[in-house]
Image 1 (tube, rainbow, N blue to C red):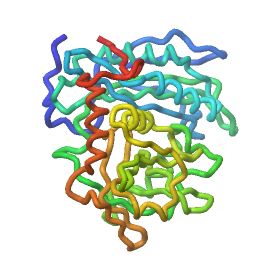
Image 2 (cartoon, rainbow, N blue to C red):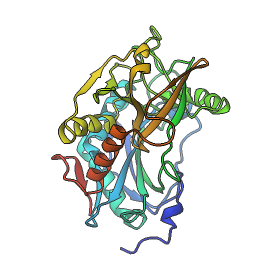
Image 3 (cartoon, helix red, strand yellow):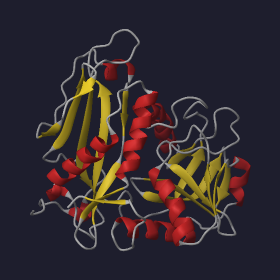
Length: 341
């Protein structure tokens, strides 16, 4: 299929409407078959559960053109599993995992012309999501839901190259210890918007959230998990039941251990330890790894030895290896790559 006439090299990280999207509806206790549509408009009642009580969850993933010309997506089974966990926590009906993966495959295949070519630096972002669609005025779960998948071509998250970020220790809490921090609920992101805009107004790129109970342990940012590298080259990531289980982070830990032969620890990370790390990064779907050069704790600066000019050496190896797997330059572990075309 001929590609769309898009300036791939200068594509931003934003929404570009594509030709098809997948839609399935839940009514009377069951999902319909669902299918592709050209209609990008969502029509719901003014009293819909999603509008009244924020009953919605979503996923984020990407499709790539590999070095040998295939269109693939990365570990969609884990996105399906994570959405199932989100749905259960929000009292929403689970969209079956196999159907989730098939809906992603159908939607990407139908928008093949929008999948950026290999080497362009761009990818096709895939957004599966679900929301309560019927009228709900009492505080209770919806009885009807819609599951949708749309795609949009996006450029590199960091245009002009990756530069280490400056982040601050945030005074706000992202999630309660037994709340919804471990699922990908829209409400979690709504709660983080003021904090991130306030950080930007203060000249910071992102927030570091500490645990709400003791404010002594590192949790995550508003949309990414932390990854640290010790001075003796050990990879460490925070562990908490209020952290979103990032698929990128989980994959990077496998890459660190199996591909790079590094020691890996997933454990509680106390903020007091942070000053002793050699490198710091934020990991997630959008940027894979964003290097952090400096953390500011109420005026006190923690500057990492890796510096503010480029990604640290171990972080760079992790980034290059994982993106090499995603783009087909390196052999992937079994089951990581779902070939679409």
